Amino acid sequence: MTPLACRVLGHRPRFWAEGATLLWECDRDCSAGSSREYATAADAESYARALDREDRDDLGRRSIISLMPLRLLRRRG
Ligand SMILES: [Zn+2]
Image 1: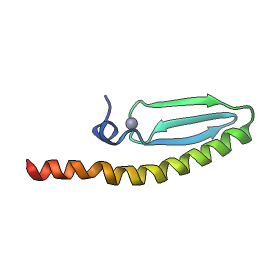
Image 2 (image 1 turned 60 degrees about the vertical axis):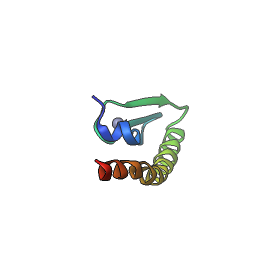
Image 3 (image 1 turned 30 degrees about the horizontal axis):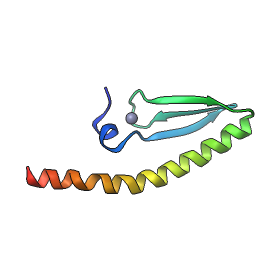
Image 4 (image 1 turned 90 degrees about the vertical axis):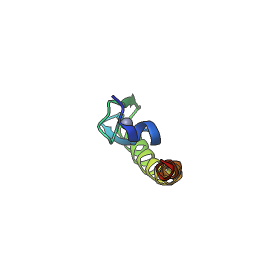
């Protein structure tokens, strides 16, 4: 079952590297997640670091925008 926050805001992926494998899993303990193989451990590590940072910046902006309609709905109800 997908948490409400994931359905409204989208998943909150956390990226990390294990050897040459880049992995991500939703930070809200839902079942979303995946992995991808890279040529070297250094590649996987740098992608994990870049994606984790970029995604957190992006989510910060996106959640502010996404929460606004919810507040309006609650006020009306
Ligand atoms: Zn999720």
